[in-house]
Image 1 (spheres, helix red, strand yellow):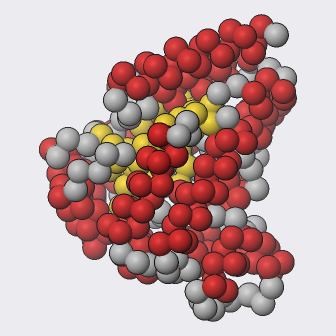
Image 2: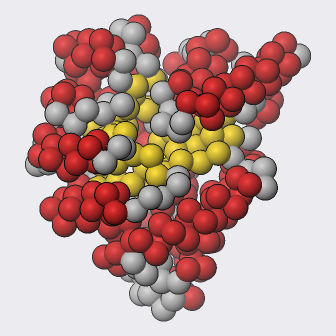
Image 3: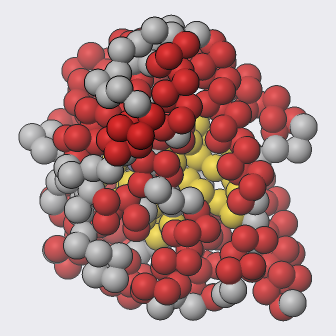
Length: 339
Ligand SMILES: [Zn+2]
């Protein structure tokens, strides 16, 4: 697949955090406008903070970023930045992770934040923008309060874009099984479930996500490669792993993209997708993830395209919408990949 074909093809991205689309420049401007003190004196120092030495440093910056949201316009700015990237990269379907609890804790209120984001995304879709669905995440680092808060919100709201409960943040000391009751409540309320697992936690976290949380997809899941039984379980249950190569490299989940076990997942029959996770935090975009998968892991044109379609096949939007997009994607591929 050529760089030009990668740029032109319609794309699906299903593992992307809305708050993780905020660039250092936007964060700097937002902090200044809202009089939030940052632990740095210049935009250059802030840009340097976006280079992580550990997952803890990443979460620290993440929470600092969440504390800078103070007005409805901040949320609109964030959504507009995401939509501009979708237009630039021809991303036509996205599932966005969003963590209302952090905005309840730091910002203008979780439900209000979710409403603003939903309205902005719905308006964009109505005027030809991408189809976007939302996954509301429990934040692992504040699991108790965040779990109750997020699931109660799902039970009480009928948000037109929210399709699933998710689980984000750190895994250390937080076995996925610990979240079982909240996930059962979300499933009873009619939602899909997904969870981050096998990133900072081991293969047993991936197994727990499947067996205890009933997930449709796992975000990352990389460390399932350490246990053949975990890979077999994913393949047997048809649970898809949303892989983010550069994120895994930056946060030292793998030593390098070349050493990433993506191909072992594919050979084991585990469905996978390619995503960016938090593009400016890892200096990447979706096109770059495709190019790295091609150049550093040797994925063929056919394999890359199948991974893209998996975002729709294993996506959580209603079937008719995903089928329509699949047919549109296949039509575009016939003309772009043949040219
Ligand atoms: Zn993620």
